[in-house]
Length: 204
Image (cartoon, rainbow, N blue to C red; front, top):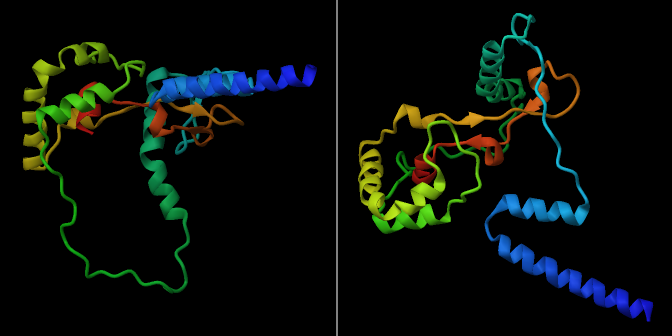
């Protein structure tokens, strides 16, 4: 009897979580929260150091503004440093063809219906930057804004330019372990920790 009851409980639990995961849809935050309830994982809290070591002059600073600039400089240049540290192969066993097309990247112009569809797919629970438009306001006004946004996006595509102010992203450094005063002990995963302006999320 006990085995039968446990079996029915397992079936009910499986059906429950299957329905819950389906309700999550594309909301990755809800999906992770639901997964944590299955694995009994505790949400980690992140704390920031009281001081940070400058990677060039090896001096500590506790000035918040200087610490932010150190993090910015580190994340902007870390990719270049990693590439330069990679030893090139001794021989090129697999030569790369250099006779490909010169212009192979094409952006097609958009239209109001596509802009509205993109706005509808954006999640409202994402972090919001200062002086930014809340997502629920953008969704409420999408019918009135879609035509104007389409004109702006298409103008950027035709001119091949994009506003410099819209190229910035707020990156949150996450401590990986070891000493907290070293920049290389922090990571910033773009897919979850970059906070982009709402209109830039639409254009992307």
